[in-house]
Image (cartoon, rainbow, N blue to C red; front, side, top):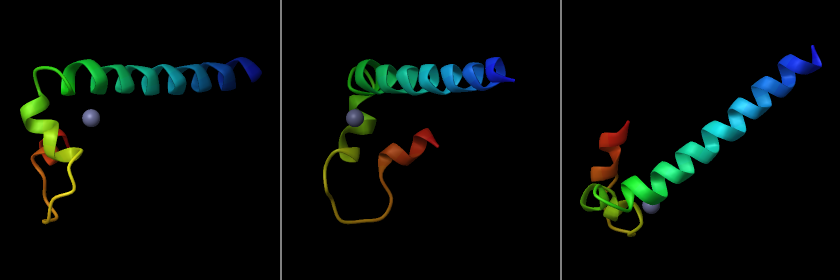
Length: 53
Ligand SMILES: [Zn+2]
């Protein structure tokens, strides 16, 4: 029981870490041209970054 909770928790933390690393190294690297407007406050609801969904 406790082991299952720990596995779920560890998976969640690893997923967050991977997402953060992917954001930092991939999206701020060669995908920066798509991701740039995600960090810029521009008018308009839609962004190029929406392509990631
Ligand atoms: Zn970013």
